[in-house]
Image (cartoon, rainbow, N blue to C red; front, side, top):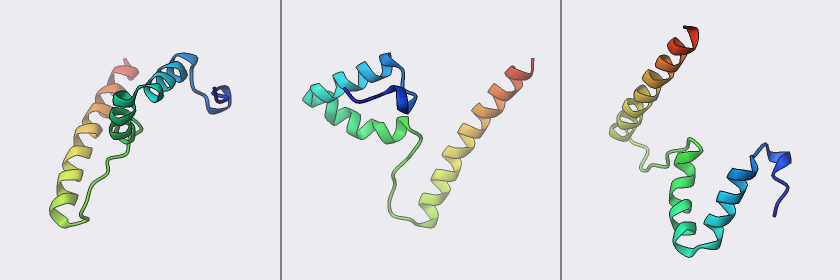
Length: 74
């Protein structure tokens, strides 16, 4: 196993990641989902309609962040 302590990854997450890497189907699934789980959305082409879609999606996350900020202020 890699040294997960230096990467601030809990042992539960490290074990889950390792189990994903040991199963062919899960490895393929994780390859597709990892960028999303880490906050990256891969898209192409870089065009105005695509940028509008991404901006709309980001507004959704902004709303969620605002709700969390409001709740944390209570």
